Image (spheres, rainbow, N blue to C red):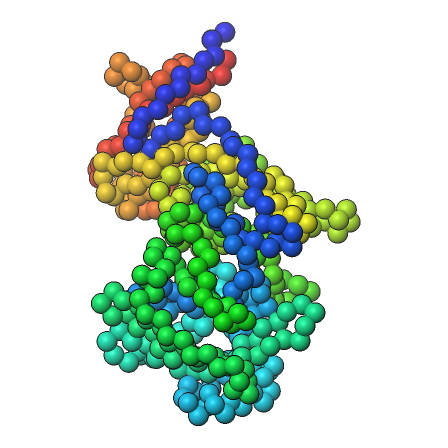
Length: 433
């Protein structure tokens, strides 16, 4: 019988992580899901903010893009946006006719993108950009008067009329003007903010409370976190129809990619079993469900996720427990699969070997900018070629199996060669008896 052994070492910059174990962690959102928790896969929790301390959020990004146009509504705080194509001018704002208000169109944020908020969902067709019209010199002028409902449990709702008058991005400086008041014109507030990107450096949004009449700086810098544990509205099927329903889940930061592996136990999940997505709800809320017979939360045990974090490292994550509204606890296991790879070809990205240490089989996982043909070679530490196979890389994500059942225990160099470039990493083989 062969002796079973494992050689553990690391090679800096080769996209390789040896003998990484799963790490258990828990995030607590608090009673009633009071807090949104921002989380870094490498640094753990990096901040928390009250979920219901804001009503609107205005992007601080410049340029005439979705990031610049985005305006969010905090539906979890009881905010509903009513839209009836009321053209923006002073007379319509002063003498707003709200007849049939509750039959007006209701606007909601998407749950797939941070940058499509309730106000900028209409199709863009220059010079019309949803809530705004492009005028000149990087300036967007508001098109409509909206009504904002502010509902609070146990109290009659408040109603505000809102006119987003102007937003500009000129020479790297972002400015914003908006006005809101009670429907009868009382409690009017006219706000002008200049240099938003300087006031909120490295942030995504300026948050604002219409109830308290003040701006808020409530999120960490945008590069400090990968995912957030939060509450949001999602389209949910209820009674045969789809409705926007409040859910508790996990949203990915812009720039983080998520591959959802469903129907497979986490122990058997491999990179390449599912494509990566940039949608912010790549994890979402359906990793759990409530059993109405036992009155308990059940974790879906055949669901896990591979995440590419903001640094390009790959993590495997799956959930193990959920505390519900009593404490908002989310328990999970995470494992660093691969650090960010240094590539010898710009056409090949995120090259990693998984699992590593390996058993009878391992996989080369790589993203290619184009289709190409090449080979995989396995060499021992003396440079002797053990085996080779021809491969075909498709455009996008590929997972290439490398059988190891006939390979003696030891440390090998696994090399991926294509017509576009050559990449290599060390393979630690932990072979069975």
